Image (spheres, rainbow, N blue to C red):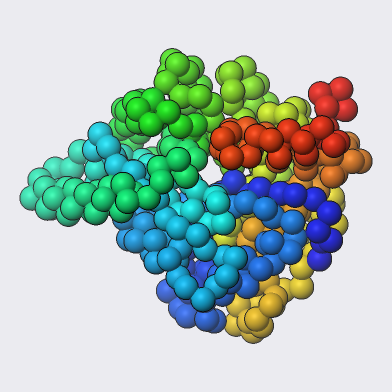
Length: 360
């Protein structure tokens, strides 16, 4: 278990996933344990968490989580935004808010232009009702707590869910939303580097910056992202699987990087090349032998973002892990928390962040 000597922000957590309710592949293996997960995160030095939702249903669940009483220091409000036929949903958790973007039919990328007109029309009606409810909830709260538009982007590894032409069509539209609300973008790119970089570059004037999270691309794709002004790259366990991955991550300047778990997925496994640099270990049990206070074997969670930090430091040859953490913290604050966090982020960086010279 890591000592609390660094300050971390996990930019991607899926807290509405069933695994945090103790449900794995439809089977209840243990009780919900989100408070324990959060307690481990805060103890590990995690200072902020950006939380995602995956559907209107998960959005409502996120609202219920955030408004749960009796858990001091864990939950602090939910905010919503709707517009232009797209749903934004998110959860603010101890000052951390993430907004996820969905097209009208609520799919991962955009609505299928379905031939099933009757079913599609009914679903659009129900989705509009959901949009109205979420919009009303958001308008009752402080919109300044929303930190990003996303997750949106292109994923050509999942064409079975949505063809590439539809993905590109609605990716373009999502920049209109970012422009309207003047927020940074939380982006996804998988096996779509050329189209992704082209569309982002054509829309740079519409958003103040962004992060391409869960990066698993090539060196060429990395360099294309780095050539885009105000674009950061998010690294998690999936970014650190192979020796080639480590070499590619090693070429990302620290001042252009953020770290994440994307939990409960994307943990660093013993078979991954990055495991050689992991120093912080949390005791765990299999889900079938769950014990309160221990992590669940195979389920990623925010405290383990410390391991991502350690692997990044190792593959970049950086001995000053605290300095690296300050730089990454500063990066994240500058993009997602510019109004509330500027002063503390600058102070933390001045006290010993990783410089470009150290990073080279």
